[in-house]
Length: 276
Image (cartoon, rainbow, N blue to C red; front, side):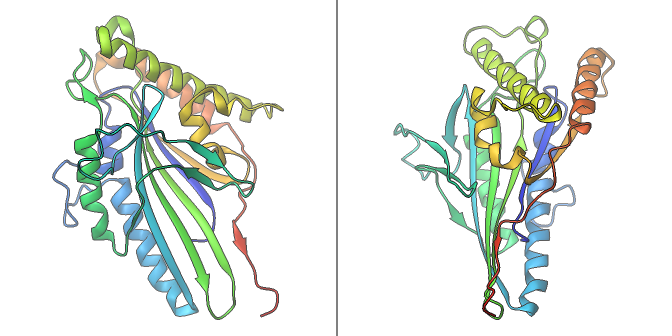
């Protein structure tokens, strides 16, 4: 609402509860007490927007939901009948750091309840499969995006913020997951993109001159939300199972690396009317 670019990740091994953290249960409603980050974040945004209306602010909030499957973008809110038609989703960033994804379905939301049908539709469309590690493993990274444009008729000020809520596919060891065929290809794509995310975070932490955002679709998509003028947070999900100890240690080491990364001071994307 204040014009910042924000990115929140759920990271961890497969089966550790990342999708539940972000979305909540499959049969989620506005009355569910175990709602995930996405519905809770939307609720808080509308509560704060209502408070800001007293100061003359009005907001337009537009949602989209996509997944990155085998390094290809897929629209999870694609209208019925159009999902079978191949589309090319090009990712572009303009000079102001705004991200445009061609052909992606955009849905304006006017109340928190509008999000629940979107979550259910995306849940049905998302790529999942069974492996030895998880009987319903997400085979893609999903990104729920809210574009929030605000304007104040009294002052003439305006803001343009973006919230990215990312459910990362779980890291897997091929020797344990038993992946073959399509599952093997998916696992390799997942592990490669997670490795690319780690490379970007290391480069940011080291303040390298070159940040390898273009090495994966995920990091390129989220480039404006990972750079020096954004706010970024990562949830770490770990499995309580003793047999997952090695994966838990790897996840904790990655989280420690993320926690030590300073990307700079976040900057608002806003325009102030100096005439008022």
